[in-house]
Image (cartoon, rainbow, N blue to C red; front, side):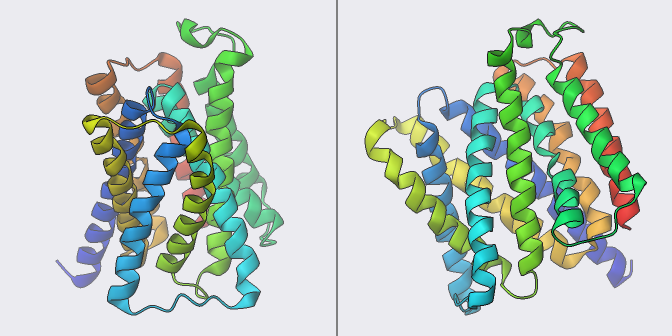
Amino acid sequence: MNIKETTTNKSILCMMLSSTSFVMMATMVKLSGSHLPLMQQVFFRNLVMLIFSYWIIRQQGTSLRVKPVHRSFLAVRCLFGFLGVICVFYANNHLYLADAQILQKLNPFFVTFWAFTLLKEKVTWKRVATILLGFIGAVVVINPTGTFGASDISGGFTSIFPFIVGIASAFFGGTAYAMVGRLAGAVEGIVIIFYFSVFSIIVSAFFLPFNWVWPDPVSWIHLILIGVFAAGGQYFITKAYTTGKASSVALFDYTGVIISPIVALIVFDENLKMTTLIGMAIIIASGIWSMKLKR
């Protein structure tokens, strides 16, 4: 096996580990969400991330200084990333785990949208078609008509609202990733994570005194694991993109979509709905098509 093949295999493994870590983070969020406030979950998620990123920065001797010309993009990344985390946690707490996971995988389509508008990349009908196909898949997952045996989401806007939040998480996440793209080569990725964690801790800490719930021993474990799995996901996704071609490894980010129904069945006794299965197939197919166009 040559060096190139070894690097590719390593990057693929890292992407699969990253996607799995984020599924486990979502599982911990869902397990603790029934008795802990959302902002408390967000705070501890970013507290562990802050410790993790600062440790790496110290180990690497990386400077925390960001040039003024890049600070506006960093600020937008922090704001939209924070809003994305809130929406992700809300969706995980109120949706089937598989539904929440597949809706989050819409973020590449929002990245493509910002590539058109912000980065002024060329617009082709094929790239627009991948976005439309992705959203068709999202509509199938949401299934607003309540058909195909999905009676659990046929209760009107109140029932559909968590799905809308799930799509919003992809929008905010896609916007944050677009800002990271603008900062690429100018600001170290671990520095971006550090400032994002600082921003998220400060904002979420403001809400803690108003609805703090003292965790029991099991809840403490859940809160810590939220941060641990989030840090693991960030670490492995960074390794994946720095050791292999993005076009080769991005496909394996769908590992979490495959794993999440299995975890949901074992942990939460959630059965995979037909609409979720069909929507998954459409979104994954559109994602693969989009990756081929980028290649």
